[in-house]
Every structure is written in C-alpha cells, then in structure tokens.
Length: 313
Image 1: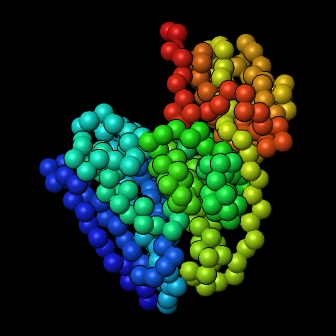
Image 2: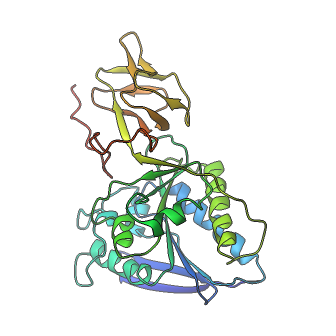
C-alpha cells in the first residue's frame, strides 16, 4: 500500500491558514494537483479526495503525485472567492510574494512546489452548469498542448492568458499545466463529475507510466477562447438545447419566457448553460467554445472573471 507523506505548511496561524500537501511516491515525474483555490469548490475537492483514495490502494507508484486538496482554506470555509482579510483572489496573484498579504503568501508557498513539478493539474468547479473540460494555453505552448490532449475530457479550451493565474504563470515558465473545470455548486458535490475527472486524471497517470493499469487513448477537441451569451431582457430563462451540443450563429439556445428568443452569436459548442432560472439584463446564460477552424482572434474573448453589467431593478 502506498502511504501519503503529509507536509503541513502554516501560512497564518491566527486565521488557521495551513496548507496540507499529500505526497505519494518520491521519484520523477511529479504531478502536482491543486484544488479549492476559492470557496466554490466542493466538487473539485471531492475529485482530489477520490484520487487520493485510489493512490492509497496501490502497491507502488513509479514517480510521484502531490495533492493540495484545499489551496485556500479560509475562502473555502466561507464559500467566497476573495479573501476577507485582504480582498484578493488567490488565482490572480501568482507567483505570490513571500512577504506580502496572506493571499500572496499562500500563492508563494504553492508556487514553490509548482515550480518544481513536471506537470500541474488545477481543479476548479464551474460557476455554471457545464461539461467538464480542460482550460489551457494550448495555442501558445506545445508542452501545454501535449498535456491537454492527454486528459480524457471532450474539450480543451484556450484560456484567456490573464496574468496572475496559476495556469498562465506556470505555462509561461515552461511548466506543462492545465486547469480542469467541472460541474458543481458552491456547497453541493456533483459526484458524477468528480468521478469523471478522477478517471481522466488517473488515465493521464497511466499514460505517463506513473501508475499501472489499462490506458485509454483520449480524443480531445481543441477550441478557441470561450465566448459569452448574455440576455437582453429580464424574466424566466428556459434553455432549448443541451450541454455539449454544437451550435451555429443564429441557433436558438433558449428563451426568456413570453419575451424573446436567445440566439447564439457564435459557431461552436455549448460548454456551459444555465438551468431554468430568473435572469436579469446582462446575465450570462451560456458559454460557447468556438472550434479551432471557426476561431478568429478578433472575436470578443472570455476573461477569467467576466464582468456582468449592472442589473436594472
């Protein structure tokens, strides 16, 4: 049985900010898996737990896997994205600062290990009902594209390249890194999504000969940057399509009941889609990933944190 070596790093004792790194194996290559960089992370924390349970049941590991199941303990406990102590988002301050605020010091401790890893997988829970997918700088870097194409999820989406995010900073440093965004809510676990992601990551480990088992060749569709679809009126949004469905410009994706049809202004694949709910003008109801053949750099692009227009009451 493989036993985890636990390294507890106290970033700030007063607030209980302690990072627990669980290491399985001691050899190369090393995979670093990070979860819960914010409070809306129940499903990705569960996915990391499932991976740890699997590794504990193995007889040997040819390489090493380091897992940080909760990267932002205070934000995770409070269910928030930014720290109430310094109003900073952890996934916007990498590589961090050893002498900075608590969030910057947390990022610095994570970066110390990230900079030594051979591969990094950043687990995230989507804010909207979505198809579990990879987000990575696959257009810019071959070392990133190679990893993205070996994660057995249907889509690998070009990330925005926003500076300060772990995905961007590590890629610029030459580290093969991907983020995986999965279904889930702030305080509820989507167990099916967690299992799907666990299997994709374990398969990646098998492809790298870190763990034994049958290898599954992955078939991943590379896409451009995510595009948002916003509503222009207030009311009950009713979706008319399904997640993962291909759409063309002008395809009706849903309606605001008794008011208007919502059409896609882009060609691509529906990666995330709101369930039926009450929406306000400017709300994002879907995100479309343009296929590479249809992607144009001049199109409006997604950012890591889209700014929704102020609601009109």
